[in-house]
Structures are given as structure tokens and as C-alpha cells.
Length: 358
Image (cartoon, rainbow, N blue to C red; front, side, top):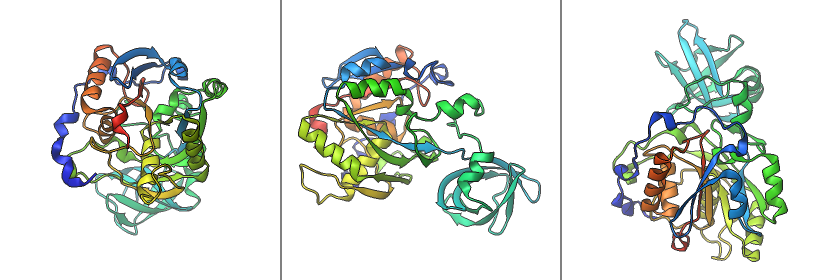
């Protein structure tokens, strides 16, 4: 929608109080062991368990998953002067080159060398905005696999452990490049996927490499002034075909996670010349799509998601789908009923009013 229409809502409209004890620090004992809050098309709330999702989806529905794989993007090291540095790789741009966040008492300049993991040196080539352009001596992915750590979100207070390496990753992850997990997918185990398939529920995959910006709150009161972070996505032809087939069968397109939403809706926005019955074509590239209330969804009919940070762009995205007031009530209900929040927390299945999709 035009940015001139955005100020109808301000940052305060997307705030809520969350007690610290409701921020999940560890995953449930089993992937499917979380609770599920169902917000139906009449804006009614239902307290369920995650396996109950099987009764909410229908034959011929299509689940669209984000198959990005979280890389071990966090590295500790030091500058030549001995000062400590922490590097978080944000994006691999060439086999031996990456853009990264670098935390240090004094920012390193071009030409400086950083010793990482006490194992190898990287050269600072320069900066691109807040990110540092780093040259690695060997393929970045190989060095991260050997020496990096899983980059847990900032609200998780423990360092990554062996259990996090597996549980902060979906069972279908296959495209390395994310520094944060598409967390709605963490609830699925292979048995759950097989059960849904046996019910006639189809699935397709897109890729969006989740960046660290996903955790950043909006810092401007006027939403029209917010500069959205960039993430790389691809919607392959196989997903486009699966969506067309789901529509032909009378099924719904259900995004698993807000990252799948961003990929699908970004592809639709990139090909706005497509006919109304097929508003999607294979597409890839960078997206800065900022979905706020008033946005008309072109592809997504329903959404499975986790609970999101106060004042975050993702809370605005789900509010655009379900309505601001229904989401406020849902989050107040979740807090009152002690749902677990954020990446390792519980899930929410949103079936929006029909008017919220064009």
C-alpha cells in the first residue's frame, strides 16, 4: 500500500507487555510438544496442542515451508592489537567473502586483519552500511561449519549447545544461508509431515535467508519512516505450480512462518503484471517488503507462526493478516494463559477474515 497511508497506525499500536518468564529459553521436549493457539476466521480463539493442526488443515490445502538452513554464523576472535571481536556473518556474497556484523570496542578499518576462532585470519575489505565486508582464506561455509557457533536469538540467554545445533533447525532445512531459524517450522517432525501428506495436504518450499534484522524493533513512531532490513529470497517454479494446483483444487495456501509469507508476497509484488487468478511467478532477489495493516495479501490464505516481539515488523505482518484488534486479543490471551513466546515457544494458526486477502 502507499506509504502515505501507513501513519494510521503508530508504533504504540504494536506494543504489549510480556513477562520475561514467558520467553522460551529451550525447545519443548519434542518438536510437536508445543501448544497451538488457533485464531479462526471469526476471530475466535481456541487453545489446542500442536498436533491438532492436523484437524485444522483440509485436504487439498498447500503448506509452504521455508527450507533455509541456519549456518553457524557466530565467531569469536581478536584484532591484531589484541582487542576482542565478535563476528556474526549476515550474508555470504562470494565463496570466500561475506558481509558481517562486527562487535568490537573500536570498529576495524579497511585492510585490518581479524584472527577468528584462533584458527584463521580474515581481512576487512570495507563496509556496506552497518555490515563489514570480510575476505575469508577458504570457503566461508566450510570455515563456519568447522569453527562457528549457532547464532541463537538475543533473548535466549545461554550460549549455543549441541541440542541447539539440531533443534534450532527445521527437519527439512536444506539451503544454507540463514542466521536465524524460520521458527514456525521447528514444530514439525517427519512423522507430522507424513501424517499431513497422508491426509491429502500438499507441501511446497521457498527459500528466504533470515537475517539478524528480524530481531530488530521498529524505532520510529511513524511506520512510514521505518527502513526495512533486506533479506534474500527465492520462489521456485515448483512452488508457483503447486500454488496454482492448490487453487485449482479449491485448497488454501498456508504459509508456515512469516518468512514464507515474505517470500511469497515479495514474489507477487515483483510480478504485479500477472493475471489476478495467478498472481505469482518464479522469482528471486532481495526483498524489503514491509507488511503493515491495510496490506492486501495476494497469495497467502492462512498462516502458521510463532509469537513475535513487541513493536516488531513481524507483529505488524500478522496484524495485517488477522486484524489489529484480533491479534491484540490473541496476544493478551496468550500472556494470560502462559503460552511460551518467541523462537522456542508455542505456535499460532491464523485463519484471517476473507476481506484481508485480495
